Length: 132
Image 1 (cartoon, rainbow, N blue to C red):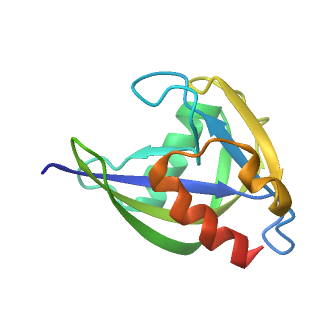
Image 2 (image 1 turned 90 degrees about the vertical axis):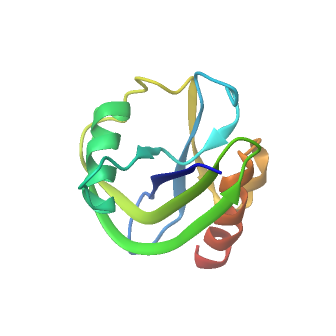
């Protein structure tokens, strides 16, 4: 089975306080409308943190600071294996403009179950719940 390596940004309102996190709904493809943490594929020769900065700039027109590593999620979809490195992030410049996603929300800990998460992101949501 093909493995796809990606990164995910858990963008929070404050790295010190973490009251709200930013989630997006996919605007394309098989999982259109399901919710995820923004990010994308790691290019050959790229380290995860640089991939995350690049992807968030491309998808949300925003500059972020990549902070602590949260976890790597390993998930088998029917057609591929996903390996997703997840990091806490904070906005340093920009207004989170949706260039690819169809919707976005800031979610509190109590609102994490209010959206339909992609299967791979559910494991990350459970971990974040314990860290907020």
